[in-house]
Amino acid sequence: MPEGHTLHRLALDVTAGFGGRPAAVTSPQGRFAESAALLDGSVLSNATAHGKHLFIEFAGDRLLHIHLGLIGTLRFGPPAPPQGEVRVRLATPELVADLRGPQLCTVRTSAEVAELITRLGPDPLRDDADPDLAWRRIQRSTRSVAALLMDQEILSGVGNVYRAEVLFRNRINPHRPGNKLSRRSWQAIWADLLLLMPKGVIDNRIDTVRPEHTPEAMGRPPREDDHGGEVYVYRRNAMPCWVCGSMIRTELLAGRNLFWCGRCQRRG
Image (cartoon, rainbow, N blue to C red):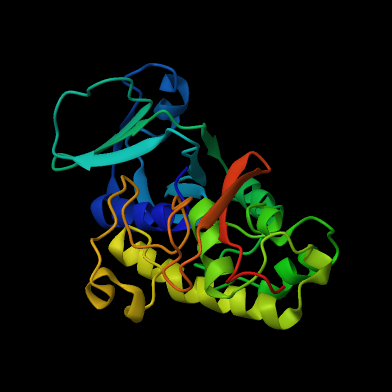
């Protein structure tokens, strides 16, 4: 599932490609035809993101709300006949954006979007984010910090990669209960997300290793993975830790694979 930096990157791309112009909105697949007709020909003002939710705003207080889910994509290209199951197409004479396979695609008002956002945790990529809101929710929970970081009502936009990597970078045991996490550790997690996630928006990939652990610095081959990016623990099960050399561990936690180093992450 795309993490928050991907949705913020898409919001920037939609605004750059379509912002301030009328857009043709269609549903080549047909499943969204009635809602697409409500937007068709309206001026697309801008797009924003909150966590894993993308909001594309049109004139008339209508917003196209998209959640890509596990298999959804939003791809840009020159005008051409749609290929495959395109749920929604945004188009100008110069550019199209095709949405395929989203978990959610609906039209909302600004009031409905605002109400939805109140149920979500703070997004480190937004200027209005309040880290204390997430901290208060973490403090009250006995669930593991690894599970809490993936809960979008606690923290928006953090997925499996950022979860594993910020816990490793701050040497935090992923199984530590939220109510046993120190405020100092939470502040370190938040600061790390503020450092890593904006870089993900710019580069459109997740890189988390520090300069001393890059392939060039360590004389090792670059990571080969369809997710891209240089990481410490994510999808590196049974491989040596770049810091201590012990084997990276994995287990299933809350339906997702958790990765961590048992030696580096002993403390809470």
